[in-house]
Length: 226
Length: 314
Image 1 (cartoon, rainbow over the protein chains, first blue to last red):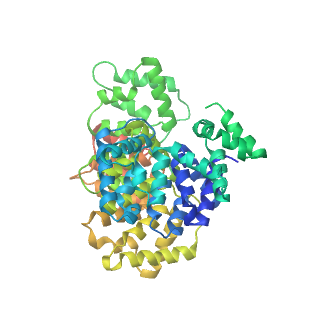
Image 2: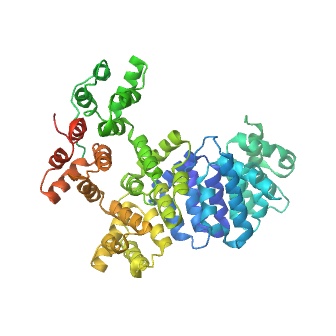
Image 3: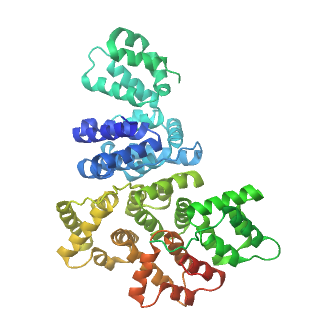
C-alpha cells in the first residue's frame, strides 16, 4: 500500500475510534513531512470522497477539534531559517498561556493553536529551547495535563522522545494490544534512519521478548542504513 | 474558457530573440513584446524565460522590469510569472497592506481549485521562506484570522457529490448563526472552510429557498466589521466566482478612479481560465463588451496588453 493511502486509512480509523485514538492523528500530522501529509490528504479524498478536515470538523465535538483540524491542514515551511526573537516571544506567549490560563483550556487558546500549527518544525524546536530558558521545565513537562498538546510538542520538537515511549510501552511485560499496534504503525511508516537510533537502545529487549516474523521486522530496522 | 489567442506555429527560440531585440538599444518596442508574450500560455512563457536565459545569460523578468514601467510593467510582471508563483506574490502584496481586510486573499483561496491552492502554498514557501498560513496568522487576528487561515489551508474535496440532507441542515445552521447578528463564527467558519465547493453551493441554494433571499445579501447590513466583510467576499467567491469577478471588474472600470490593480489582477489571473465566461456575464450585466470598457478606461501599452489578453488581435 502506498504510504499516503496507509496514512489516510490510519486517520480514518483513528477518527472512527474516537478520543482515545486522537493521538494517532497527532502522530501522523506531526511526524510526516509537509508533502507526505499533503499526500495523505489527497489519498483521503480518493478513498473517502471527502476531505479529512470535513470529517474531523464534523465528528470531533470536543475542545480539541480546532487544534486537530488545524494540524492536518498545515503545510509547514521546511527550510531551516529561524528567527530567534520571534521564537523567544512565542515561547513567552506559550508560557503565559500555560501559567495563567486554565490548563484544560489551553488546547482551545487561539494563539497557542496558531503558533503550534503554522510554524515550521525548526522554528518550534527553537521555541522549545527558548521555553526551557524561561521556565524551569520543558514545555512538554508543563503540558502534562493536556495529553494531546504534549504529544504534539514531542512529535514536533523531540520526536526521538516520542519514538522511545512507543518502543518502551510495546516491549514491556504487560504491553497491551494498543501499545503493540502503535509500535507496528511506527515501524511501518517511519523511515529506518529516524527510528534506528531509538531501536538500538531496545536491542536487548527485542532479542528477548519478540518472536517470529515481527522480530525479523524489528531486527531489519536495526540493520538498515540510516 | 480561456481568452488568450496562441498562434499555431511559433518558435520559442525566435520568441526569445524577438524580445531581446525589442529591449535592445534606445527605448523599448512594447508592441513587439506584447505580440509575443500576450499570446503564449504559462508553459510557453516559462520556456521562453528559459530560452532567454540560455541565450543571453540574463533573467528575462529582471530585464523587463528595467525596460518597462507603470501599470504596463506591473501587468507584464504578473503575467509572465508561473500561475502559482503569481498568486503567491499577490497574496503577499495583499497581506502587506495595512488594511484589516484582505479580500484578494479570500479571492485567491476561494476561486482557485484545491490543487492550485496547494501549489500556491508551495510557491509561497519557495519565495518567502515561510508558510502562507504563518504569514496570515501574523498579519491578522481574531475571527478574521481564523476564517482566513481556514480558507488558505483548506484542501477541499473536489468531487461533484452533494448530500442534500446535509445541505439543508447546514443552511439552517448558517441561518441560525447569522440572524440577529450574533455570528457564531466557529460554526460558520467550520462549514465554509471544510466543505467541498459543490456541497457549499447546494447549501447556499437551500438557504435561499428557505429564507427567500441570498445569504450574502443577509450579511450586507454590517458592512463595516472586517470579519463580516471577509465572510461576504468568501461566500460570493464560493457561490459564483464568475459573477464575483464581473463585479470586481465593473467596480474597477470607471473613467474616474479606475482601479488598475484590480483590473490587472482579474484579467491576468483569469485569461487562461474562464475570462471568456466572465466576459459574457459582463456583457449581459453592462450591455457593453468588456473590451469596450477596458478601451474607455485605460490607455497606452497597458491597454494594448489587456486587450491582447482579452483575445483581441492588435
